Image (cartoon, rainbow, N blue to C red; front, side):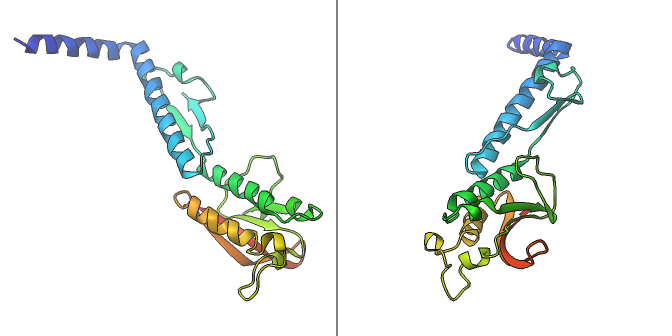
Length: 198
């Protein structure tokens, strides 16, 4: 009969999974495959950018997946919004009109109204806002009646990048262009790009 070989195969499989080493290896492999799949999906949704997740194995940050206990837990935390913020920040600098370079150096990121220092980890927040602190920043953006005043960016900088980012990252974040940000530091209204996580 054919039932006996199938029963033997099941018994071997069950014995393999019963061993602590096999359970640990299986957990690690499932986590590795799942992480790879999510990273691929995140990269596709964020224009090819791929940031590894923060992984904890049995509560130990950065531990190898293979070190998981047989009944342990692997947690991978992803931050797809980071890709969005990096892309917008880089695009603002790349698309900035160049004369003295001051405009390109004056883009700042505010998280819930607090300015972030470039090169530091961006904290979690509800509202992320990119602003250019130059007093003439609004003149670079078209106002509905006339083109922006820079021949290098007649369609504007913030307006164009907000539109592209909103389309490109529509699965990750809600992105909009705003002209109504009043900057307490400069005492001017500034155009801005507003990013909210979905």
